[in-house]
Image (cartoon, rainbow, N blue to C red; front, top):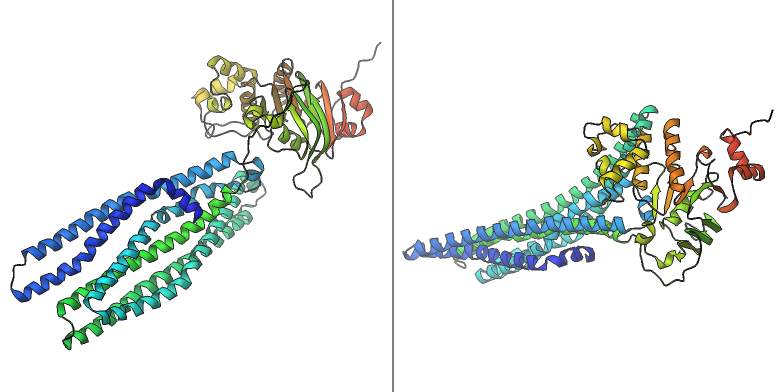
Length: 571
């Protein structure tokens, strides 16, 4: 409820107007049976019927017009609340720490933006509906009491029974809706992962097997939705049946009292009209409580997104020190308190110019090191410096403004080739854009596309290597102080690799380039190589010196069968 009320808080004026309109509409509807009684009483006196009939028509028209206005108003409000919820979840995603997002299936994260807020559509106006329906319910009972107390007691007895049964059933709707939404989120995660790996699925002839897994999640989600639908059906059936039985009981008792001369026929008719009209508030109460339960279930899942830890940029004063562009001093990183250190007492310096390669076996800490440099994570101990300033004295934006990063998988963002290359620097000139496209050897490919740089990547036939070069161009167009490459040549052919190595060489002549190497062939020409092993810095040196001095590096080279340049023999 707290999450739901926080989303409604900016819209209180609209909610208040909707409430007033609902009260006016209810008042008009409540006056209609009394106007009907007046018409019937007039028939017995012989007075003119024009006045009572005109009053009844006015009440019907006013009730319809006001009801339409309220419906449109609250419908618009509901869509705005859904939009606000989606925007708030999206904003939380972009402010969240990277680990909070990468630890969850992408499909589930998408579901929390698309499906969950949709349940707030009816819940957003349910509070107004509950107030209006409650007041209409009480007012109807009061007016029924003015007509006949005995019939009112019969009605209250039936309503009490209905209320008790509904109190038992309603809480189960929220639980079923929450379970259903969780199941839909799991379905989204499984389906998204499968679609990403569809080439592997088909090549492994696993279509039927994987399809069965996804279908199992879909059937699980459906079973929870069916359970929620059954709960709602029971609530609706009990409420409507209870009112119907109440009307039958009122009709029987009322007919007996009218026959005995204890009740006027016009009062009985008016009472019956109120009894039928009572179905409206009860139905509205049931509908709004059901919607509120679904909204609470959705808000509970949205609150889990709100609970994600955010990247907080609260710079603390720190003294500037002389040193290289990047430096790590006695840095220790753990992913959890009881886990072994991913990096343990690491001290590294990255000079302002030159190519530094980071190598090591799987699990050595290479990716963890980049996560620290990009401040996706903060170390438990030690300090990191950028241009001599400690990271804790800088915001995330200030740090990342000096760094450009090319991931191993080289993901592209939705949009055109132009938008992808300019993603990290939208204000780059056309000349700079053309230059960087040529430097990564994409000019011919772009020229062959009908729309050139404005070709949408979703429909472009680009190889993995070409997408990786787009990612490299995106990094180079920024002219960063430090270029971080996570095996930038992993998916390109030999000729393109040579061209990209030229880019790295050119960049290293003016600024710092740091490469995580999964293929050691990409770092033979590095100015220096840092060997990581089990979170420790094992050795630092050139390719030749490490071949001569470090067994682990030599083993990596031999395992990958890298051809070591040999000095020609002197004749």
